[in-house]
Structures are given as structure tokens and as C-alpha cells.
Amino acid sequence: MMDIRAIKGEDILAATEPEQIFGPLEVGNIHAPEALSDAFRALARVFHPDRTTNPSRAAKLKAVMQALLALRDRAEAKLAAGTYGQASSISISATNLYTDVFFWRPGDICDVYAGTYLHVPKVGRNDPPGKISRHAVIKIARAPGDADLLRNEMAILKDLFATKGDEHDHFKRYLPEPLESTSVKIGSTVRPANVLSQSHESVSLAEVRAAYPVGLDAADMAWMWRRALEILSWVHSRGYVHGAVLPPHILVHPASHGATLVDWCYSTKIGSPIKALSVPNESYYPPEVIARQPATPATDLFMLAASMRLLLGKHKISSRIAGILDACLIPRQQARFSDAWEVYRLLDKALLATYGPPRFRPFAMPQETT
Image (tube, rainbow, N blue to C red):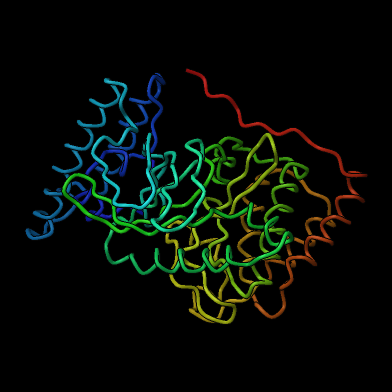
């Protein structure tokens, strides 16, 4: 389910699919109807018209509740029919061909769909055809006013992917590849969208933390931290601050220990303020972001360290590793670490002193019971 704090009445009124509000629910899971019911009750407590004595406000809330009830009823019907998560009415105006599109997950400002794509060569060019097995994500803005953030994401990713050389190609594996900016029609609503080439098999650090409520062992947290530091070291060398290195935006592949840094809507050049805030994740931001001051690599390192603290939960860590985390979390921007590669090297030394020579540590997400 989407974070309740992030859902506005306007979101419910504009929603054309229940997945946009209730998020992913597993068809066939006996707990899915209960999860839907819990989500509906939580939202109903927020938007029930009895919460106000103002007639105008009550009328608006009544409209929201009617829309919420309709979405709940449609979600129940789709769960019963086994079609929850499928977007039958989505129409993508795009150059490439997209198939098997389904709702994947809610984002901060977008509904994120997934599918596969086939590259269509342009007339007069010898573009090689793509493979239907390649994965794509379609990020659809909930509000037309967020089109500028989508344009910002596409421009920065295109600039990063334009960098040539084997060394740069290594780091580009950790980023979603920009395919095209387009518009998507869902029902009768047309919205701006970005289409990116990205695996659907990874999980976010927010999902990892939810799956391990007590927290992760520091040795498991360490490889996720190292991978994210690798990505940031290259991004910063290209002159950019990601601007939203938050648990939902750091994706990891448990089996291969791969990682992807997603949601580049908030990114900016080093020395410029962050474009916008992810309101549900405001507690992870350093003071300079809240104050709309210029962002630096130290800004990203603060958010990454805060995300690692979340992963650890109640688990103990060595004083050397704790010291590196603390140095990334100093409130004063100029006093904290500002070089991702320096943090990477210090972390490696701390891990060697704590655990000995590096070795692959298997990691898996818990299996859901049905």
C-alpha cells in the first residue's frame, strides 16, 4: 500500500485504477483481501466527511469517500477475478512497442508500471532491433504539474548514458536506462510518462527493511552500502547529486548482490538546491535540503547513511563501521564526508578488520506464506 501520508484527496479522485491507491496486492494470497480492507479503513479514517464540521470541506470529503469506495469495490472484484495488478486500459503513445504491461508499485509522484519492450528502428537508420525479453518500467505522473520533474529525470539520465568508455559502461549498469518520454492514457486521463529499461526483479531497501523488522546484520547491510557508494562515486564525478538516496529508491538484487539507483526526478547539478522533496521520506534528508540550500555529494552521503541506519534496526555494529556512519550523518554539511570513494575505502578497511577477507555472503528475502 502507498504511504497514507503521501495520498491526497486529489489522488483518489484522479485514480483510474485501484492499484494506484492500494498498491501491489498478490492475487491468490489469502491475506490480500485483509490487506486491502486495512488500507481502505486507514484511508477512510483520513477522508471521512464526519471529520469536519465545515460544510464545504465535508462536501469535498464526501466526493473523495465515494471515489474511495468505488476503488475498493473494484479492487475486490479484480482480486476475485485474479486480474488485480493488470492494466487493461493503459494506452502508451510511444516509439517502441510495449507488451505485458502491469501495475508494479506506487512511487512518490508516479504510478510505476512494468512490462517488456521491443525497440522499433527509426526510418532511415540502421538501429538494431531490440529483444522482447528486455524489461521496461513506465513511470506515469499522477499530476500533470509534475511533468517538469519527469523531464528533469530524462535529461539527466540521457546525459549520464551519453558518457562513453568501458569504465563508464560499468557504472551505467547501476542506473535505469532512458528509453523515451511519452504520454500514457489510462481510461480517459492522459498523463506524462518516462519509459526506462530496468529489471523488475529487484527489491527496494524499504521492502528489505519491512521483511526484516528487527533489522539486518551489518555484514548484509555492508554490501548494499558498498554498492550504493560505487554508484554515487561515479554520479558525483559526472557533476550530479542524485538528491533522493532514500530506501524506496535504492533497489538491490538479493541473489546477485546487484543494485540500481532509481528515481532521478529530484536530481540536480552539484551546488544547486534539490528540485523537490519526497514528503513521506522527509526524515532522511539533511538540514541543507530542508533549508533549500545548495546540495553537494555530502547531501547524498547523508541520505545513504540514514538509509543504512534504517536497515540495521536493532542490530549491533562495530565501532569502526559506526564511526563511518556517524561521520556521514553530521548535521553541518561542511563537516561530514563529501567523497563517496573515500567512504568506500574506509568501509572496506573497517570490514576487513571486523570480518576478515571479503567473501560472498548469500542474502535472500523471506518467502511469503499463503
